[in-house]
Length: 497
Image 1 (cartoon, helix red, strand yellow):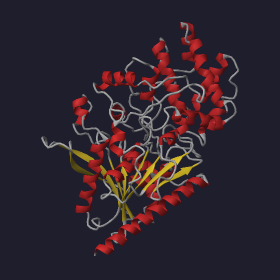
Image 2 (tube, rainbow, N blue to C red; image 1 turned 180 degrees about the horizontal axis):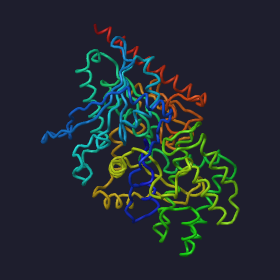
Image 3 (tube, rainbow, N blue to C red; image 1 turned 120 degrees about the vertical axis):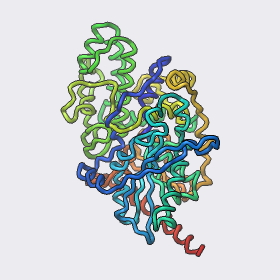
């Protein structure tokens, strides 16, 4: 989401009646990490300045004037006051410096768009905490963590920038984001068309709500990725669940499983086994999201085309249970121990990122209700139905709130968005989130760009020598649209004068 964290949803689906949780400190969810290179990262770090703005905790009420400091970053090395533009990253669920350092596309195109780069941190993430260390204390303090409040923060920030930075007042602003940030970019253009002239919404599953798309589409795409990865690969993973179940029937079997998978903490009961399965599922999901054509460390340090590497160990679903699970362990090592430094596998962690799991856990229980389900036939997972009531009960145990599954559709229009303009929806066909994204043109200004060889917002990553031609073309088309938006803005400005 980032990406919207899947594990907490999986735990809710896989473990009915047990309050779900998010793995503690997903330190390196450098997922959606732009692994341009360490050199690129250092360069970026030297070229942005850090700023803060006082934002209202509640933009939509009038009884309280409490404010908090929202952090934002500015890079203006290529910005031109005459004929320039402002590229505005709509921060998502994590520390904004992480997104800044990993969104190489914006840095790559800044020169040709004469652009100032602005990276705005999402409230309740990173340093932008409305109530400081009390921000996650309870639902009363979390009540202002919504996409609507975040968009209002962005609008207020842009007005502030235009007022306080000489030369910025009459420049076009383009919103850019990936995953949940991509959803925010699209919604920002929809709700504040007078603030931004257009938006690039990369890997933005704006239709993964209600019944707008089938609840099983996400897991089906994950499965297709593993089928593509090698013969019998998805079938081997499908067979692994029953093998785990058979070993889990006895204490000796649980001990063998714990040792065979080199787990940091031994499995002792049925709940541990369910947690193991959820962890395995998210591992396969993450591999699908970051199936990039070059080495990177977005979520974990990984080889190029990691699913193909994983599938080298998953060629035969017909071997004994013990051999099959030993093969699963070899596959897991590609994801968790490519660096060779892991002493054991921790089923409470799937990434090494700076994503804010507490905040997203709350959002996933309020507005961001994305149904997931599996049937074990069209996908490689155990069958699990989407059960909103159980999900709601788990949310109430965790946060004392109930989800509002229809609200996002009511707020942002669902599939009835044809009245809007100037939004690019880009999706990689390898990315499971594409199932909830816009993959066909809606109008001539609500355009879809699909990247056959692309995983999760590959187009927002920095240029790389191993980029497939399809993503190079996608980026070129995205820049072409942006240049047109900029030309139209200045043409309109000239007419007014």
